[in-house]
Image 1 (cartoon, helix red, strand yellow):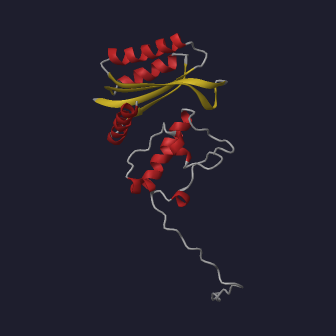
Image 2 (cartoon, rainbow over the protein chains, first blue to last red):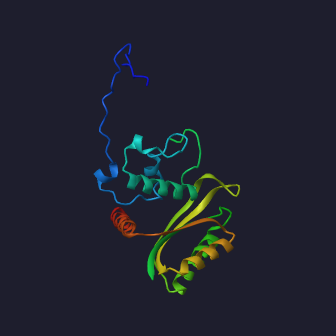
Image 3 (tube, chains in turn purple, green):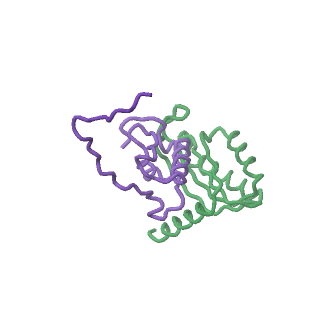
Amino acid sequence: MAQNTEIRYLNPPTVEVRKKKYCRFKKAGIKYVDYKDAEFLKRFLNEQGKILPRRLTGTSLKFQRKVAQAVKRARHLALLPYVTDLLK
Amino acid sequence: MIKQYETVFIATPVLSEAQMKEAVKKYTDLIVRKGGEVVYEEDWGLKQLAYPIQKKSTGFYYLIEFKADTQFIERLETEYRRDERIIRFLTFAMDKHAIAYAEKKRANKQENK
């Protein structure tokens, strides 16, 4: 079997310090994500209006689903665009 | 079984103020006639749509919060589909967190009015 040789880097890989992500809903004690509040939902969208993944926003799974559901309802009601550029 | 619902509908901007009032009255009367109870109403007025719906880029938004029987919702939605003034609607069953949120919002709305 190919014995795995030690991979040597030219320069040591810089491990960037990982900011401890927290779920802003648990912290702030918010229980319900309102689909009518477009301003608040915009913080979870990128420039094209797509929903940001959990690994960037750090929200817990339970609230990520609520946010996704609220964003889709807001899009249905034309409060948020399905796709756009320079949403911010 | 009586549950609390929240419905938002968008009317075409072509409507005059009177027609808009009449459309709203039609739905609130329908709710009350069928044994429901309107808890709260809110008129967002003419708003810009995020994307054109039926070639229109603005619309009259109206929110109605009401308590009604579960069978009633189907009746309400067929009414929406029949009515050609309404270009889009959304009915939402409110759980206890949503109800608490709505109450709190109304409370501080009264405060700063």
